[in-house]
Image 1 (spheres, rainbow, N blue to C red):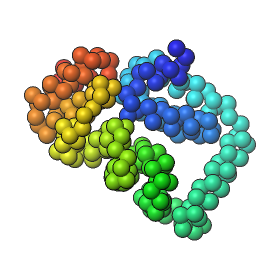
Image 2 (cartoon, rainbow, N blue to C red):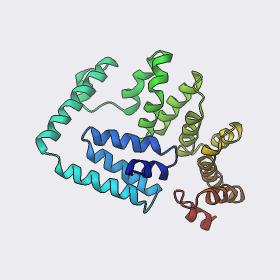
Image 3 (cartoon, rainbow, N blue to C red):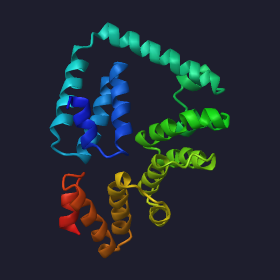
Length: 229
């Protein structure tokens, strides 16, 4: 397998969008942003050789990027961002003042028609979540579901958002209401384990973590979770 295939094989499906976003940042020359995401991926997959190798490559690329080229790229990013904000109804002063909260900046997406929102909604939700605003991420995921986009990838991301927001009872309701495939089950069991653990339900958490450990003993920090449970 090549490096990309090795990384994808090591990641859970809910982490693959983060990896793809990091690679997009790298392609755009935004190596610092890409490095931060890879550092987060390594936190969930400590010691993974493929991730460590790719992170080293990105750091080398970032150091090698000529300052003039980096500045030129940033100018292009700024122009694109300003154009997007104008399309969403914001002015130059909003951008220059740095006054746009994430929800305000992305809020215009809610005004898109159903077909357009279906195309960009999940990407917007993932962007919001990886930027630290899980409430906005959940709003986008919920709108997709309201539009009939109830695929397992959207449901799994919704589950991740609820766990990140400490809405554990709602998360567990989703766990039990969806017919998950074997592909998703390991990730669902892990998130359910986190929810049970946070609610103080140690026996239920242990059952879920044990199921994850049996499926893949290298999954995230599952060995530590099993020992602690």
